Length: 322
Length: 256
Image (cartoon, rainbow over all chains, first blue to last red; front, side, top):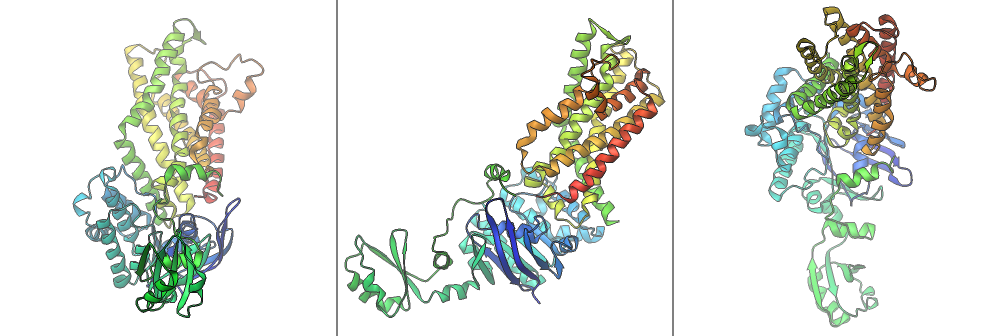
């Protein structure tokens, strides 16, 4: 039986449907990713699963409990690291963790033991008595990660765990998340709009677009399903029709003013393709990435770069929503 | 047991914040002091209210003013808190919404009462050095005033929390100052006697629960009541009780 199961989970805001009849099954112990561009409905899905936003219709069970009817039992089974900061910056790192221990009703000796343990894991032991205000963004993120794990939840939700972090911290956190899933058999559900993060971390992932699942599978499988390699051609005039009849070309699609071909064994066929299309400005051969998977299933390239969590923008939108 | 621990956690956090954010505390005391000294001193040079000098007469009102601003702001702050701050962590913890509400009331009330106590101490000093003659400082008068302030503060924190829990963005904040805090303050008789009010004004004053808190404290500290101690206390307690009930409900319905 899956540890998380959503049944037609739907969230509508006034004019738009943020999450549209989502059906997902997530198994115990896996790292599951929700990948998608900004505004795809990832965070809304997560907030519904952690009982902070009620679904408009449909429901989900987590660890066997219903997210609407048994919200407090769900909250006992989970830990979450939010996208926006949720630690108290006037308190020290240690005090934030202590509050967490109280809120989760941990016995004091266990609490102190775990605080020590998680602080070591995220390498903040020597900064434990500094106020969070003095932490860097990455340190604060690590502290909140430590806090989310402190009560050993069965399921850990991570909303854009490495958003805005430097490469070193990202590597660090990835390694840590992997270890957790392996050693503690923790189920981890994360949202991300970073392709590399999803590719590296997730056992399985769902590409979410406009509130719906575009495709679901393991990163390797998803890339393999595209079939072979990708050739990207750039030319002033390009006759696509001649390529369409080639038996080994699986897919042709325009991308960013160029043309992308998906085909098996690109190295052998390149010569023939170039002969057919004539003069080209540039050619690129590569293995498919999750970007290509995304493009293939949604027909659009994923807009990377502008990260979510822009506070002023969100405040402006907040009054329109719900 | 676990709920008590959670409530304690919330209170502990408020106390740490109170002790560490001293500038906030200082500014919240300076404002009422200016009212007391400038309005009280300035107006007092020309008139007196019911035989009391103005500064003494408005001292209970200034205590209430502190309670009003500090506690309503405290409550409304959760509209920020739940977006960018610690509140989300609490909302997702396995703790009842009722306990969260109780924890917030206790935290906010302690916070506000500590500020009031500082102001009270300044009032006592003013009385002793003769700036503000006429305060009756007895064990009874001080205890009674504090009881009134405690009950009122709890009710006012609840108002703030109710508004804050239902607001989804902080944009309406100015409206709350204009439509909640200022009317409650100015229509309470904090700054003037309510014995000879114009007919059009009187109803507004009588429906304002804060009026009865001011009357009770003024009665205790100055010995001049419009109503009676018991009536005032009963009314303000009823107000607070109702606010707490509404607040409990509002917190259960709270959205992120």
